[in-house]
Image (tube, rainbow, N blue to C red; front, side, top):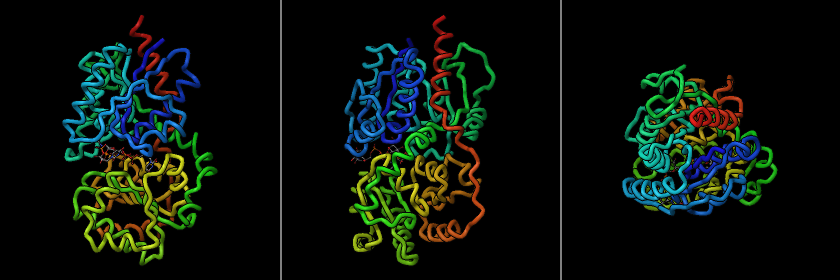
Length: 386
Ligand code: UD1
Ligand code: UDP
């Protein structure tokens, strides 16, 4: 039996981990035993517990309860806690997801104890090291043993950083193996979409007009923490809702709920609160979010995961960032980079609305990425045990 230690902590990685846990339970239960560590990076019920409940993710075996804090302090507490768990459990490998501080901490703690790191969602680059996530991704990739890229662009980023293709095992952090396997978030959409659409009460509860609203999420630190950028984004949203007579639905990350009060220009904040077409709500569950995405007219976001889901659900998307690691979405004309610029956001809305020649090639694989990942982990670790 192979013992895998899965490390999660932030909302998107709890969601991604659901796909792998499902594959382990349904197909690989005779070969893989999974232990789960939650770092506690996200802790509100609607940022953590709700996903375990509705996506049937096994309850974590450990919760390090690190909570929020400055990057160094938060990451250091995670490394410390993870080191103890890894020493106690002696796993055959550690599975990490994406690019958060929880990912970085697990990559550092595990690689220093010589436990192979399996990085799901490897290879992505925004080429902007002022993003904490870019630093986390690069470091994690370069201490990993198996790297699973969701897109072709991710795979070629790794090649250009010196990773080899077609190399033979045994695979180690010094001789890593890279795989392009598609995106586990697509696996989740295929599994949960029908349930999401049938279970959603948000439309009724908030008086949302199905098919006739713009869905918005904003949580990146450079947008929420900078009063100028945050104000510019909300000016644009207010303008679109007024000029187009359009509802804007905004499920809010707790970071955003806290910072709109502090960082928004007071007049824009007042306008936001008095505009009946602006529908503000706390962060919703995964099923709630899928339903909101599926029935939206368009999406505007600075989230990595929400950009992808918009594409997979065939919705145009405005990206509130200067660059994206999901370059295919922009290259294919499904998404537009607007950064936080008020006019660019308003113009992009009109451009995407009037565009008619959308196409949706299979950028994110075939919906079976988690099975592929389990198979490669088992094959690699079995070879090692021989
Ligand atoms: C983190 C990730 C980011 C990811 C996002 C997903 C890093 C560096 N950033 O950003 O890549 O896109 O998660 O959502 O790891 N808070 C609460 N309750 C919670 C969680 C957070 O109130 O349950 C508030 C706290 O005020 C906290 C702030 O949100 O200080 C930021 O949380 P943190 O986990 O540090 O970063 P995120 O912005 O969530
Ligand atoms: N999401 C959610 N509820 C929300 C907002 C987002 O369940 O209120 C989901 C979304 O559907 C996607 C994931 O969270 O699956 C994206 O995570 P997030 O935006 O927090 O982080 P990022 O992908 O930018 O790292």
